[in-house]
Amino acid sequence: MEKLLIEGGYPLEGTVQISGAKNSAVALIPAAILADSPVTIDNLPNISDVETLAELLEEIGGSTKLEDDTLVIHPENMFAMPLPNGRVKKLRASYYMMGAMLGKFKKAVIGLPGGCNLGPRPIDQHIKGFEALGAKVTNEQGAIYLQADELIGARIYLDVVSVGATINIMLAAVRAKGKTIIENAAKEPEIIDVATLLTNMGANIKGAGTNVIRITGVDELHGCRHSIIPDRIEAGTFMILAAAMGRSVLIDNIIPDHVESLSAKLREMGVFIEEADDSVFIRAREDNELTPIDVKTLVYPGFATDLQQPFTSLLTKVPGSSMVTDTIYNARFKHIDELRRMGANIKVEGRSALVNGGTPLQGAKVRASDLRAGAALVVAGLMAKGITEITGVEHIDRGYGGLEEKLKGLGAKIWRENLNEKELAELENI
Image (cartoon, rainbow, N blue to C red; front, side, top):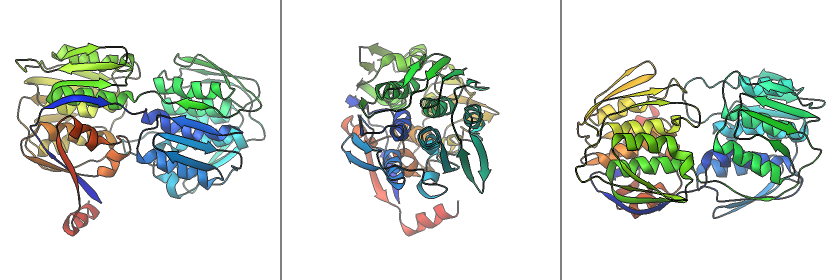
């Protein structure tokens, strides 16, 4: 196992290229199951989740070829292989295998998914959708069993806005008989991306990106070629990094509209931001003074919960009191204890964190408990005096491809080392 080391205090300058969207990729790869001929997906991020999902497709009889940022998927020989354990437990997005396999084979057995531990994230809305389409769903020994003689289109109202449930129901409904209407659907760009792939495969989907999605089922879907949208969370993370330590940073290959809620908050703080068609330029202020603000996470197009953690690190730099409230996940402040180790003054009350900023951070040994907590610690490490050692790097690798290379290209001092025996033993005891 490895640890990530950062020597803080070095300003960032230059251009960084944003990769394809992680939250699109993890849904698009399972969606290829629904096709009857090869699917090619371009602009994939270089992250471990992509490799895990490609391996899962091979477990159910498919063949895959991953070269650079392109994955070719042959679904012709796939079958409804039960996946109760193993790789399916490694990432939460494995639940998209449920909708895709149910749509294609009318049955599936999928182990309850893993991924980042952010508190209760029930899949009851997914199950509600599958049952409305005619599937029988049972939970047996930690695996979800889905079975349907036939899938029939239905009107489905989601009790809570859920990206995962919206996409999963879409995957199951595109080959159901008749019309499906998903009400109170999530509006995230990744949903539009998945709908675009499915439409190119021959699906009939209207309204993706709005709160009502209408799907008319088709008998078969064919392969196609699709390029993933840029990753708005990676883009936002680098915008936060640039606001924290940037002298002048150009963040390229992004869709500025997708990060508008973050841009608005950074401008409110006093960060200089200049937008172009597919890039954002951030320049440091001469006085380097930023203003404290309050932030509340909301479903898209509101402030993304995935950016809350790195943004909290940025706020430790801002003199005065700022408030961060996360309305999406109730266990998304696990990074706070680690930031406190580095000298941050933050108090957590329920779903809110009060950040008393302006106190310089000090390098320390910290641990990433999940993907975005890892990003928060990278932001903190770049700002801190001295060297920060981050363990739990495997979480960061799930969502940020080539992070060290991109940061080195901007002038950061960052590298990896293997954990020694003592450090490994300490981790095992946590």
